Length: 206
Image 1: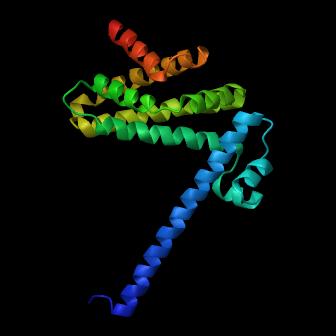
Image 2: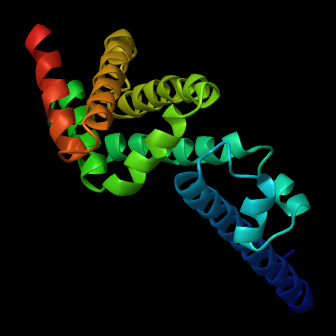
């Protein structure tokens, strides 16, 4: 039997309440991450306290720990978001191109939308701390896995999995070198320019 009208209204209200709660949770999480990133860029990572982040985000220290366990997790959240964007971008690419071109074009579209100033400042924050440098290396493993999974969605044949894994590995290597070159040049050119060069060098030796 279906729900009675009062029961259905109550169920709908519960769903709406849960949806509102989740939206508020996402908004608070984003506000904390944004406040933390701004303070890192302004004051430096080591100099920024949890109390300062909480105050800037308009929350208590206790609430901060509900969303993040440490300052480091704020940076990891930004990196995790980019990894999710990579996966979606690869899947969204047309399938009438090679796997390596699929990844290259997906990454070019993403880097074309970079906030270069913010991204460069974030890279400097990470480079300022040996602990952050070490932790950030894990992002490349996550990016490689995300690209591999996205390619498997587009080319699901089991016999292609090994070659798709190779594509994911070398693509992340090209991305990593491009970001390093861009950062070492202090963002003299757009990130996409370094990415194109990196993939061109890669395809020249394949």
